[in-house]
Length: 353
Image (cartoon, rainbow, N blue to C red; front, side, top):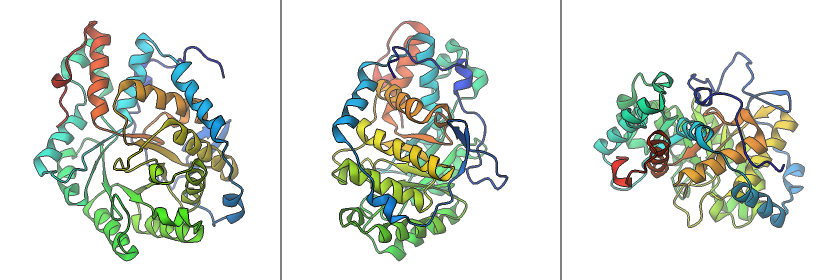
């Protein structure tokens, strides 16, 4: 589609998802629509090995298509500001460092509650939006700290689990780790797959592993981290995506952020098209999370463009799209301040934690 400028039909405030979304609703309400078809939350399907084996990826075509998102798509002025507000509302603010402390997590949670300086909010005239991020993502040991700091905010607490980031601890330990985080109050769990199952084509083992994680998550929302930088080929990425969705993933996620190569647009294109095919085949919607190496407002616009063009407006809310990022928020805040004042500020004026 040759489009020089992308414009969302709503006003800026309509680009911010303010409603609480029950991702495991039992009411049967549609989670999204695609090509006019109502889609519901994913509950998984039996493993279809024929589907997995038939997956093919034209790498050259994927790379050409991804490049158009960088060179042929622009959003300007108030539309750009609106899309950046949407990006903030889809963020999982994350701290996953070996030197994390309770105080650092509390500061991150304060930023999650108020992601932009109040004076910028006032200059933009968006105070009524009550803008905040989607979730805060931490290690298990900080789940209770985050829950206390975010109480009453509607911001979800996500915990990384299953031997993050390598995912190589015994399966029983990984399942127990999930249950402990859910018992502690985590509403979302980011799990890591065993990449060796993908390399060896052990699709039943991969399916069984993710299904066990899904069962352990109970009411919590499960994001399956594929570790795409480790999977070597786009075909492996596509096959792992399909198996994860069959096993019941609520989201498929690119990376832990610890790999040498993290989220890239070609990988994102392959994963979103796998989501689209799964939706057409099953009538169920799976979310997408881009994580690792996403640091600028420009990158945020590229990923939002990808979601809109490949999956439609239904995937432009926090219920089906997330950024795993923290440093990106500072650059978005700088861009929005420039939109409000006509001047750029220094990075140090927008600290994260």
